[in-house]
Length: 79
Image 1 (cartoon, rainbow, N blue to C red):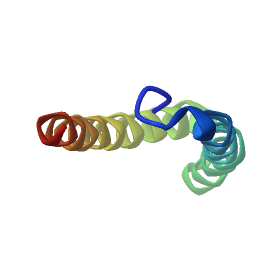
Image 2 (tube, rainbow, N blue to C red):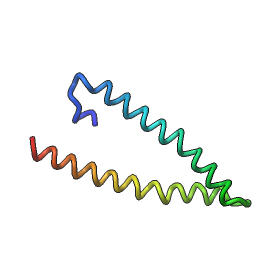
Image 3 (cartoon, rainbow, N blue to C red):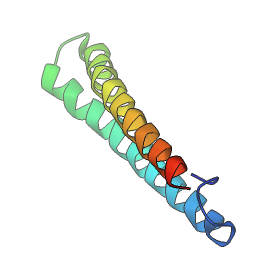
């Protein structure tokens, strides 16, 4: 992202990315694992909750990486 941003916008770009990453990763991650752990219940509920979050978030991240790679390639061809 920083290589795509104009030099005068790199600080804002970096700060925005950090805020989004922290809100999603540190805010929603443990909260979602806790909700799923309560939903599953039992001795192994935390294990299943973490596995569920990983199985959902990894493909979701992969799709977004692919979409951003396509957009980046299109942007590079336009320049």
